Image (cartoon, rainbow, N blue to C red):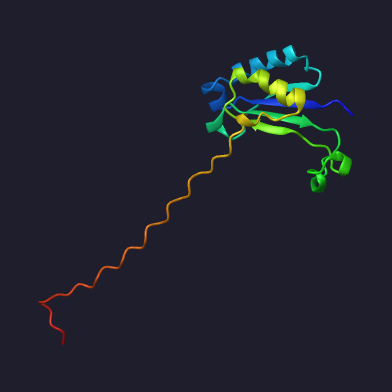
Length: 147
């Protein structure tokens, strides 16, 4: 079985980078990758934004597969005809303290760190438009007589 390869991408957009210090997360991942001895199978990079700013810093951990993923059979194990699986996760609110766990679990064992994944928060539904105003009643004047 070929060796698994991974790519880790850290967001450095304005919210994740400037406000939430994703540079510290990146630095911690550099150390964790070196400490675990997985630098030969793990690539670390930056991304400008993942669009999940309110949940940052965000870190994408993606398994890089050499063979194409078979969409129809991807959920089956390979021994039953399924294609290679790509263990991918967008981790949210990542702090430097999470770096060693991400590397040991996701990179080391291929197991996504589920507690770092938050569901995408949908915007609340828009309020229904106000009902149309009733047309004003015709003015009745007492001083005008009908012919």
